[in-house]
Length: 108
Image (tube, rainbow, N blue to C red; front, side, top):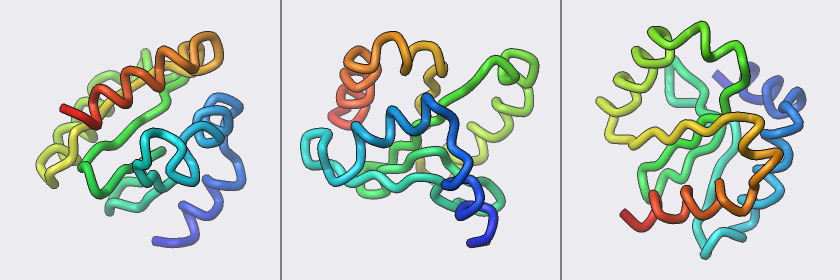
């Protein structure tokens, strides 16, 4: 389960790269995030394992895959995680707002 996450880390979208620059190295209020973190059979875009939060950055293709995303979310929730979904365009246009939403979720 390490090959896929490694490949995904090398091919992150622009929005994922931008969000990662803001989350890495405990920059968001000291919370540690991992990118492309395996939670078999899935790979979470970003995970704060200590707080049980997964952040998924969704592109336009996800508007057509709502049922598959719902199944994935339920499976991750069954493993004890809260799942927060944000859109690529939100990350690109309003990074500070996205970070504020993530921080609120971490503190909840």
